[in-house]
Image (cartoon, rainbow, N blue to C red; front, side, top):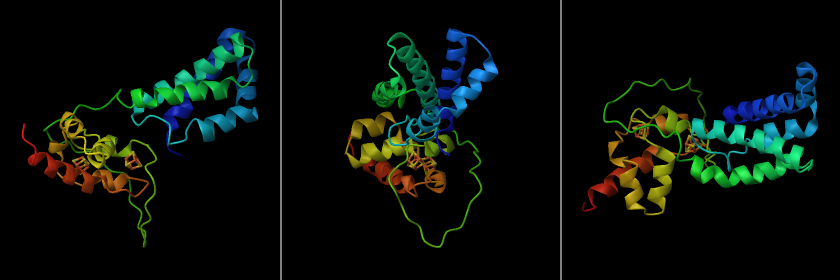
Length: 200
Ligand code: SF4
Ligand code: SF4
């Protein structure tokens, strides 16, 4: 399951919030929270929808925690039982901003980062980006391959410069880990080549 960070922080936010506000038996509250259908549906399926969650790990933690706290506030003070859905809509609006928090600092130094174990497939099917952020975590220059790919696809040269696409050395780890089988490396190299033709 991708976006575990979102799920963990959402559940902690709601659980500790309920215990803090209402008190009572913590185990009972935990069991109620875990086995209430709507909480599980939100935590496992809606809050972790890759299309709307932030890319960076820090962004995902803030997103999950914010979702938990907002759910608690809306349900407690507005007496609105659909609070989690409203909280999710509000937190979804923060995703573009949260994408910018917790970006690793690009570096010219090459770091050794271990990719996960590989699995062999005979045919490769690509799908849309799941916004899992794996390509960013594994990049040995701390680049943001998916953000660079998006900027390149839209012809945003200034963004390519700001995200330092020129530092990519084509190692291919970002393409290797991508669960959507996208090839960020190819886009990175094309973006890097495009920057060579741009006058400073
Ligand atoms: S190909 Fe480039 S962007 Fe991808 S992991 Fe290697 S250095 Fe980073
Ligand atoms: S390009 Fe692939 S690895 Fe990167 S965020 Fe999208 S799905 Fe994840």
